[in-house]
Length: 124
Image (cartoon, rainbow, N blue to C red; front, side, top):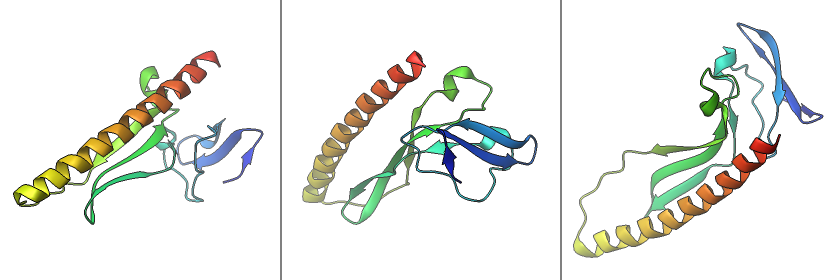
């Protein structure tokens, strides 16, 4: 969907065309309508946290501008665990621990970015 003057309009099944501000970090919206207005979600770039060839976590900025809880309308970091499981030998456990340490640093960086974005939201 095209962004015009910093806004995007999507058709919903319950409210018809809905227009809202499009955050700079949002990657856009598919041509498929969100269904209900409450399901309208802005999503940012996906960050994949892996170990060996397996994905452990996926994280992305998200914002649900039409949910009923005002706090949940603010930008948040959506984090999803993949359900990774494995039996590891001692060396692999150490490798996993090292990967998790790096991932924790990346998550902290994302938290810092989120703090900055939310501070900017508060000024609008």
